[in-house]
Image (tube, rainbow, N blue to C red):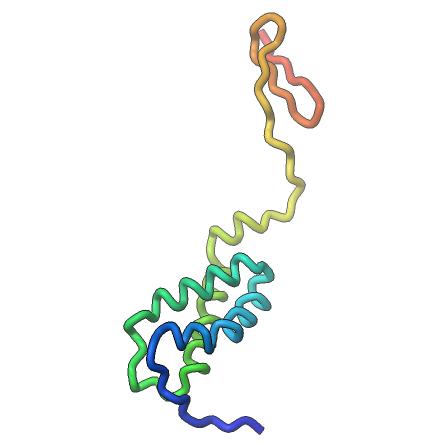
Length: 117
């Protein structure tokens, strides 16, 4: 059974980071599914709390965990995340080449598209 006691006071932000980073990373990774996104979330959380933690927070681990969950939920709802997680067919970017007659030819997936006119 877990005991919900007050955390020992930490002396510095570095101590907080080394103590809680693995736990917060695990939460973010499970929610976001990407290692780089999870690392970014942990970094952003510690940057945002720098200088804002005070003695009124009695259970630091729970407080930081809730902050991480809320940040991950916000990230998953964000427009940026929805744009990145497009599930349709991805088409290769067209490349522009000059043809023999010095006209532009767009090439996409091995097919040439000649401009009309």
